[in-house]
Amino acid sequence: MTIAPPAAASPTHQFIGLPLAESGSDPHALTAPGVSLALPPDLLEQVRGRVRLLAGLFLFGFGVDLALFLGAWVYVRVTGTPLPEGSFQSRQVQWVNVGAVLASAGLWWAARRQRVSPSRLHALGLVYEVAICFAISMVTFWQEYLSTGRLPNRTWVPAVVIMFPLVMPGPPRRMLVAAGLAAATSPLSLLLLDRVGLVWVSDPWAYFQASFGPAVSVGFAYLAAGVVYGLGREVARAREMGSYQLGALLGRGGMGEVYRATHRMLARPAAIKLIRPEMLGAADGEEARLAVHRFRREAEAAASLRSPHTVELYDFGITEDRTLYFVMELLDGMDLETLVRSKGPLPAARVIHILRQVCESLEEAHARGLVHRDIKPANIHIGRLGLRHDFVKVLDFGLVKSVAAGPAGQSHPTGAGFAAGTPAYMAPEAALGEPLDGRADLYALGCVGYYLLTGHVVFEGDHGLQVIARHLRESPVPPSQRTELPVPPALERVILACLAKAPADRPPSAAALAASLALVPAEPWGEAQAQAWWRAHRAAS
Image (cartoon, rainbow, N blue to C red):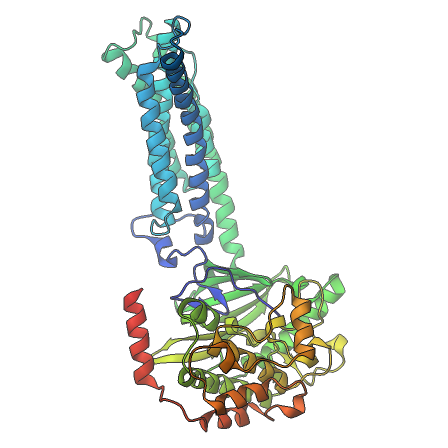
């Protein structure tokens, strides 16, 4: 049940260990006013990479033409050797190439900026389509006329008009307007060159030749946009999960994806995690059926948890293709791993405040016979709930294991792509495949407390097996020796007790651990301190 969070997580919103906007963009920016979104928002998010691809392609093309001209110019200046007659006849055309290069570079740069929403970037891409077709027409007609004295029969404009709706999809009508304007640049550029005296159009038939190919390409572009639009509508219908409609892709982990979602009747925001059956150890159809059965049984158990410090499970279900999904609350804040990576180790009082809330969540789960098995900083969320700050939510309770599940074959197996925990936070008995109870979660919570105090995991290694081996054999270095912040001796003893190799040497329950933490003398950390911290850091952001 390990879900590795992306390297760069959003410090503002997070859900079940994955960032709310993996790309760093605001999900609400996907629905900017005045922009019609015919495709699912996460598909529209792909516009960023596709616009960058198109801009880079034309930047290279126009740049090569410009570079060849500059190279020839430098060659003449350095060697004094004249080039063949007519080699410099296109030097005036290079100003068009310069403009196209600047426009392409500007769009490529804008596509890299996360502040530019995908919808706005899509509009810029269509404006760019018209501009680049105008540049292609100008360069083709002007350069050919200067070189040969004749006008070309065709340009690359039709290919560009057809390419844009395929690479950068959008609503058919919108793409039709852009394609029509782009196609019109071919005869218009010829007319402009004729009017200013740069070329001479002796035969009106040239305007027909300049218009026919681009006009035909507009029809193909509209058909292409319609096909992509239809596929997008089918994808949108397929992404309806129960009473929820999927929206923006929030994050992606080892077991599946997380999407923003909205209840179709209540308009309540939520987050949906999709899990493929094979990630639960299903290698064939029969195992997939058993995995789905286990999923339903254990999801029902997870849905019964009512602790305010456990992420709320709204709904769960199975699609026709046996994709499993959880519908959970959407949270405001960040996970503990993101917090420590961005802000450094936490003061002892705040660590105690956090761990006690986690204990409340675990105590209820353990009382119901459920073991989380993947307690780690990325699965513990901290943020704001109502008027309360530093409010903790334990995540990923949808993949717990029941201690009463029976033989190993009747519970979640550990197969390819699926591990019962994360090596840096795995209890020795979990690594050895021995029976687990709630004390395995307390070991992991001790590792979490160690990480919060020091900014380091208990044991480090080059790979997971090495880390697990150290958990099995080595004694941890006391956290006070790995941080410059003061660590109360009583808190250190509690953390090291959680890290005992034998389950019997650890606190007997989450409630007992919370009681021990409450007795640790430390500076107060409550709502006033938490609110001041969040206000300061949100302002700094």
